[in-house]
Image (cartoon, rainbow, N blue to C red; front, side, top):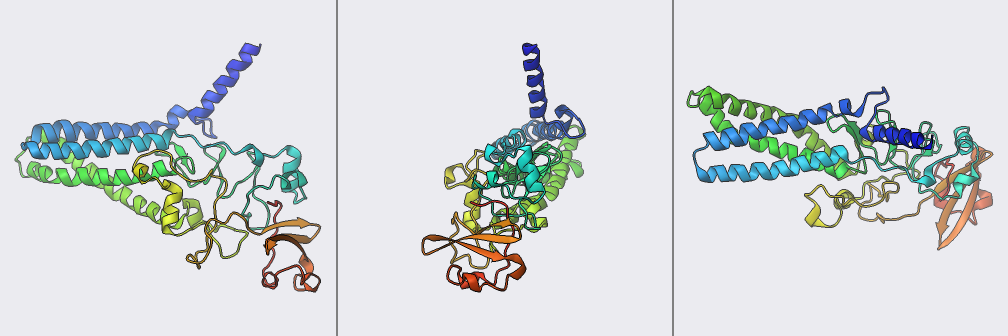
Length: 369
């Protein structure tokens, strides 16, 4: 019985790693787009290298140039694609997981001291001044984490689910996906422009149909792919420069610190994804900064004056209609209690609270750091 239980667990884990969708579709079917993309690249190799370079191009120098660029871009393209597709999302750290009792307390807007003492690095709320929790995974969602309904799991720094890589794009593989999009754009641009002249020769009747059809097809297909992927490439260049995910670009991010954002400025946004080692920037090797659970805050309106790597910020908590704010002033921690129903009456706290904070509307939050 023990051996049977072990075998069952092994099969379940294997199926989960293959990528079972919510509708029960096995991972082999989910991977069909991946096989299609790889098959398309293999056909382009035959059409471009075997037919165009070997049989059509009659100058050795041009053959070498075409061959070197094609193989260099192909290696980087396929490498990045496979890494983006087969790098699985990281598990949510155990400190974010909730027991049934803790989940019930947070879901019912009740105080949950056992979670508060964990000092989770939470800087966002759900828009209704509540901590973000996932009813499927029973976890407190780390900042920028979202639940993917296709993969049926919470994904750190969730960007989107891409069917063409049969995987979620997030903290675990965003650099690989970004490089794949860039290299796919450059690859298709190179193949299209370098084969256009020979496609024109075929149209003019200078090439036989046996080779001309292959050259024409690879030119047209690569041109169409370039036009399609180019827009996606520019989109993610913009998102990277602003330190946004695709979801965050479409939906407002509710931060505890008003006026702040995850954008740290163009250079620091780039470093967050690609790291500081410039020698590894062009390769699909993990160099991203952080752990995917905590992100420094910046201020888009005061990029030159803000401390982009500050690790502390105001946190809020609720207790029977009162808001408890944890603030730091003159290197001392001061607890300021404000009555929600009488936010304007702060006379009892003038000696403890900074006057500039009395005008800010308190945000409700269940966790303290």
